[in-house]
Length: 373
Image (cartoon, rainbow, N blue to C red):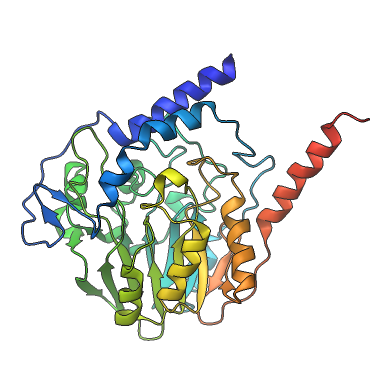
């Protein structure tokens, strides 16, 4: 009974994450955007409307479908980031996974964050909702000064109000898709700190160029604000490096166009996790993640959007395991650092399949607990 009650609470929260009754900010006019019509932003296809009808079916399955290994049985291995060493090595271009899609970049001697979520839960409520499997590998107050924070869209597992407010005096600029800046203004972020971009628009900050590129997803944080803000993927370039971050997205032909315009990429950070048959147009399966990487003309692939929150029905380790198998079959370079482990971008080393050890421990426990005879 206790477990069923917990499931009902969690399932209700899933619905709330989409239809939360939080305040809906006023929206500026974005009529000049090709993606904006009838008061909302749109994909190049009809992905939003096709997927929204599956919400209740997904909620029902989340509540009552028997699940396998939704969370790790053992602690997720972390590599703690030393803040002093982080600054001392400022001349080395590097990347650090912080969990889920949150990523710290050190580029051209400056620091950047992508979709930082440091809160305990990916939720509008501090005591309910998907809880972290692990703590961040560095504390917020240990982060260095930031040249910029890049946001892909306004969902709670990518745009975290508490994190934004704690970092506002440490960051020069928030670079966000159209409309997302209005959330920041509502939270008290200064206008001069906010840059909003439409698809294919770009900005140079120091030695880094950022380009907002298309994605196939949706947006919204409160009741009545569905698709009032844009979602985006991002091209991140310096003189020596070219990176791509997918944000949340379904597979679509836009990857090929991005690859033709801006590829090849030294590294792609690709969504790989929290997928489901009901979300096939707005989240990618591992097979689609790999194909998108190929379309982008990526040289190496680092999977994100996994291993931190329980946001779907698959086993927690499945996204990494499936992608690892697929990449080996097609001879694709897969980069799988532990959370917090440094990835030097000029010469990316090999990394171990760290999740396999945790997955195998589950199997061993099951064998020990299985009745004999």
